[in-house]
Each structure stands twice: as C-alpha cells, then as structure tokens.
Amino acid sequence: MADHGELTPGTASLPQYARNVRLVRAATVASSLVSSIALGPLFDAYLLDMGGNMLVGTVESARGLLQMVLSYPIGVLSDRMPRVRLLRYTLPIWTLGVACLLAAVVNDSPVAILVGMAVWAPCSQCFHSTHQALMADSLLPEERTAGMASYTVANLVGNSLGPLLQVFLILALRTDDWQVGLLHAVICGGFALWPVVVGLNLALKELPARERRADGAGTAVSVYADADLDRRIKGVKVRWWIAGLVETQTFITAIGAGMTVKFFPLFFKVDYSFTPLQLCLLSFAYPLSIAIMVAVCRRVAQKMGRLPAAIAFHVSGTACLYGLYFAKPLWLALPLLLG
Image 1 (cartoon, one colour):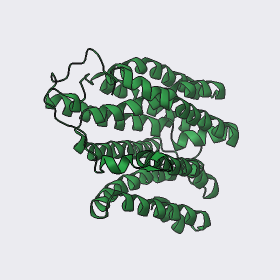
Image 2 (tube, helix red, strand yellow; image 1 turned 135 degrees about the vertical axis):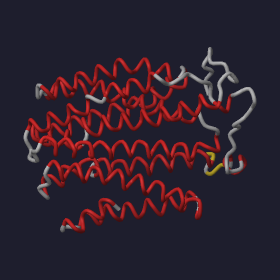
Image 3 (cartoon, one colour; image 1 turned 45 degrees about the vertical axis):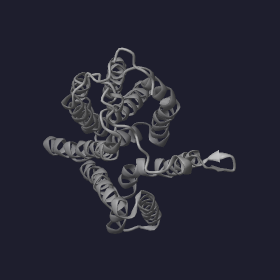
Image 4 (cartoon, helix red, strand yellow; image 1 turned 120 degrees about the vertical axis):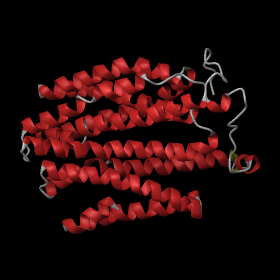
C-alpha cells in the first residue's frame, strides 16, 4: 500500500474509524438514492421515449465504457493519495456533471445528457472505488468480509429506496402514465438530494489504515497457506489463477447481465405495458431481493464454505435468468426475476 505522507499511523481512535464506516455507508445509500431516482429505470424510459433504443444504448454504453476504462487509473490514484482528499477533489467535478444532467433533462437535450454522463460516470466510479478502499482501511482484515457485505447491502438498500420514493412522488402527483412532465418531475426530484451526498462525503475524516497503526493491530492473514497460493500450475502461481478465473467469470456474467438486467424495466414497460408506478414497484423489489440474498449467501457460506456457496448461488441465478427467457405469463416471470 502506498505511503500517504502526512497521515501518521497511531494517531486515530477507534470511534473515528467507526464514524468513517458509518459515513461511508450513509453516503453510499444517499448516492444510490440519487442514482436510482434520477438515472434509474424511469430515466431509461425517458431516454427510450425521447430517442428510442439507440439513445438508451448510446448513453448506457458511454457510462459503462468510461467506468471500465477509468477503473484502473482511478484505483492507482486512490492508492497514491489520501482517499478522503481524492473524494473532495472529485466532488466539484461530480457536481458539475449533476448540474449538466439536470439541465439536459429540463431542456430535453440528448447531446447535453451525453456530456453530463461523460462527467458523471468517471466520478461515480471514483466514488465507489474510493469508498470501498476507505471502508477496508477503516476495518481490521478479519472484519472486512462483513464490512464489505454491509457496504453492498447499503448500496442495494439505496437502490431499493429510490424507486419507493418515486412511488410516493407519483402518488402525490396523481398521475400514472408516460407523460414527459411526470418523468421530468421524478428525475429532477432525484437530483434534489445531491447536497446530502456532498455533505456526507465532506464529513469524512482522513485517517491511516487500521492495519498500519503503530500498535500493529490488524495484520492481514489469509485463510490459505502461502505455499499453496505460490504453487505454480503451468508456470503461473495459483493465486493468479484464482484471480484470473474470478475476473473471467465476472466479465462473462457482466456481459449477460449488462445486456439483460439493466434493461429489465424497459422490457416490462414494453412487453407487459407496465405503468410508471408499476415499474417503480418492480424496481423497489428487485434490489431489495438482492440485499436479502446477500445476507442469505453469507449464512450459507459460513455453513458450506465460500466457494461452494458462490458456485451454488451463481448457477441458480443463471438458471433463473434462462427461465425468465422462456417464461411468458407475468405471474411466472416476476418470481424468476426476483429469485
């Protein structure tokens, strides 16, 4: 891990680390709220109505490609400077992207939406990468599995609460059809929560990583012996085989899920004639079901081991995805989606 210079190990207290962990979780929920309301399923439906499949694909491709290309340099940058300082440098640029997207939606400008997304996407990637690193820095190695699981749950809870707030807004507006005015109101309502994200990130405190403290607490210990991980297969260490296989299956899964899961709301809008309210209820239930399964998977992994549990859940999830392809009735499609 890179040396952060002016950060002095041994000067921080446990309550300060605990406070940072709470703030990271809260900021993650707030950021997910903004993203799920302003740039979630109703935003995709808005793009579909404005420019068809081409605009939806262009905007989402731009967001995904920018995040993928910049993920490594952002990771390097977050390792070479204090995490909190990097977040504070990013916030003004990210806020500029929010303002651009807000203006683009108000003026129905596809070009401005692309420009705003080009600013938003790398900042969002920096936010999530740096927050995960900050969470790891604030926990001891033996606490990180549970800590990162709670981070994932916080992200999913935010993504679930966003559509729920959209439901209340739609009910308050007393309209449930695909009018541009309704989509404008709901999307802009998400951007109105942005100051909360800024405030929570500004409240974070720069601290040294706990495992680098002067008292020596938190020395990382792998559950696998170094001799096993350093054993070579065809000239390559086992640890690199593991990393490569995990990343390969993640990449393959992302290709399938990226072309399906992201656009499930549009599928239900077009093929099942879902109204905005129904789409928001579906978007509320979907990440909530994932959050529940994350907790279930953790308990199963404690009983049968991480690898068997990961394989079992991955295979069952893929089976549900294939089942959804063949399922036609709505009563059958919904359980497969949420399963």
